[in-house]
Every structure is written in structure tokens, then in C-alpha cells.
Length: 160
Image 1 (cartoon, one colour):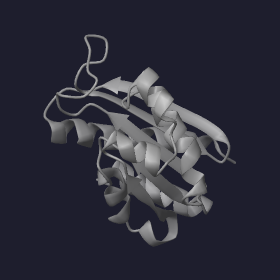
Image 2 (image 1 turned 30 degrees about the vertical axis):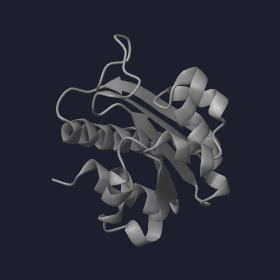
Image 3 (image 1 turned 90 degrees about the vertical axis):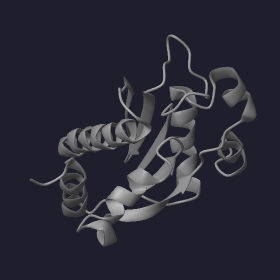
Image 4 (image 1 turned 135 degrees about the horizontal axis):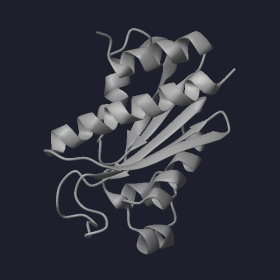
């Protein structure tokens, strides 16, 4: 059975679209999964891993005040990462990911370990999710990758 990432890659290729990533909690794994697809040469532009919050500021130019106010693992910071990514990597789709795969970040009872944020810009349209996944760090990342592919497939099927 074809993976969601493979399906997503083929759909992007069919529509002539490219993709770029700004990843924190997934540490480049999402970009790597797209690199393994048959359509990677047609669709994948590249990505940045900004695991440390300082890189979100220095590389992506996310305002430090935003990180201080909302935490590095938040939808506000995730969306800002996506909006700033096009200045670094031209593409039709820009995806940003932050979240908590292990203890020691900004977790709270309202935002436990396993909380993941994804924000995508797709030719001027936005799509996002905040989900709480269970399991090990690796399991949380795998679930995030699958959910991101599902989100993109849904949104790509809406494009004409």
C-alpha cells in the first residue's frame, strides 16, 4: 500500500507544485520523507531544521518577542515560520512544524508532550492543525508526518 507521503508527492507532481519545510520538533524528518518519494525531484525544494528556538529567530527571523509571548512550540510561532520561509526557499507550498516530542520544552497541562503544530501555506491559502499524539518521540514524529501528508492531500484536492 502506498504511503500518505508518496500519495502526497505524486499529487503535488501531477499539479506541478513544489514544497519547502521549516521544521523544529520533527528535526528534518518530514523533509527527509518527501526526499524518499518517487516524485522528490519534481516537488521537493528543501528545508531548514530550526530545533533550537534561537535559530527560529536568527535564520527565519521570527521575532524574539513572539517566542517569548507564545513559546517556541505554539501555533503562532509555527505560522510565523511558514510565512517567513518563502524569503529563504521559493516554493508553492511552505510547511512549518513545531511541537513537543519529549519533556523539557514548554509543556503544560493544556499543552502536554505530544502536542504538535503544523501550518501550511499553499499558494496563498492556509491550512493547519494542532494535535496531541501519544507514544515515544519517534511515534509522535511518525504520526505528525502522516497527519501532515493527510492535511496536504486534503488541501491539494481542493485546488483546481
